[in-house]
Length: 123
Image (cartoon, rainbow, N blue to C red):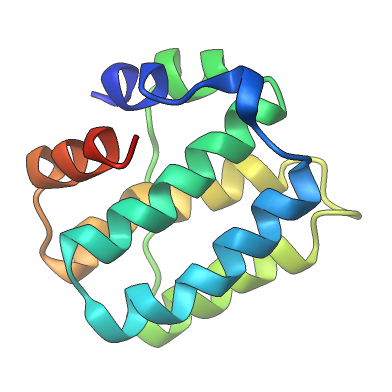
């Protein structure tokens, strides 16, 4: 499912990881408030960019996704922010972030087909 979305991102044009993380953090309130596929896709595209920049493409494509569900939407966003905030001391922070993002559409009742269309159209 993620293959087409990852291929839609030009890896040669990616900024540094810190810039990508800053971009992601700025999009999280929009996802929380909007709760729609377009806002989620925009933020998820940043997550994919971070994964590509960190050379986790294979992990995002081939490892079975194990979504991490939180008790509720607020706790889920707290866990997303915690994963980002602890990245310097947690070698698995991106795995945690990716798992949390994979679970988020289920919490928000969003369709992965619609998300994929939005991510690909953002190019």
